[in-house]
Image 1 (cartoon, rainbow, N blue to C red):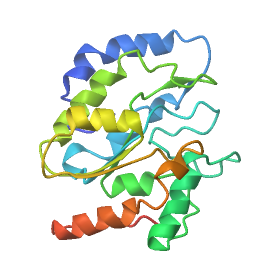
Image 2: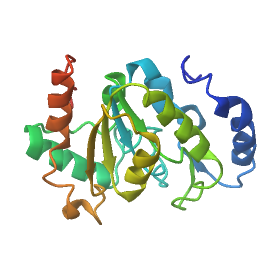
Image 3: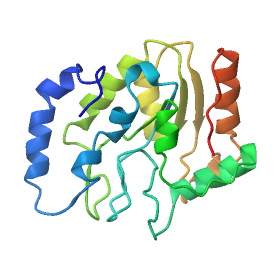
Length: 212
């Protein structure tokens, strides 16, 4: 059930029924599991958002997507890919060694881990990129643009969305390469996003995120 605060977005009355019907008609598996499609919004209501991290679409490997951008369920036996690089930068930035792969604890501290498409077909990256999720993402970002947040915009698609929908001059904007194995070395490593976010939060009179 979508947290109160997000449930009033026009998307849920106008667009979600059609998307839900498309998902039900898919012949094969769709990820994440149905009860985790809106996990990012379920866990982090608008008034709690302090940090925004934009992903792309969910992992398309069985058992890997859990509804939070970059997050992987505990016990997943495969590669960590982008998440592994995020953990490497966390270690370099704050000296924090994190082994827990699900990021629910970050979300509960006010980190909105939002993918720009909330579902994907098994084995087909970006297969649901154009089924209507962009309307929800635009509405969510417009809602949180009302007050300053820390925005981690990793990669071109996230930066494009940020320039369009996150325009509040009070935001902290950290824009770097995406942490994927293909691009992490092009500016993500060494960007120190976690300490920069925490420094900004403290300067705003808030508490830092416990990234560990």
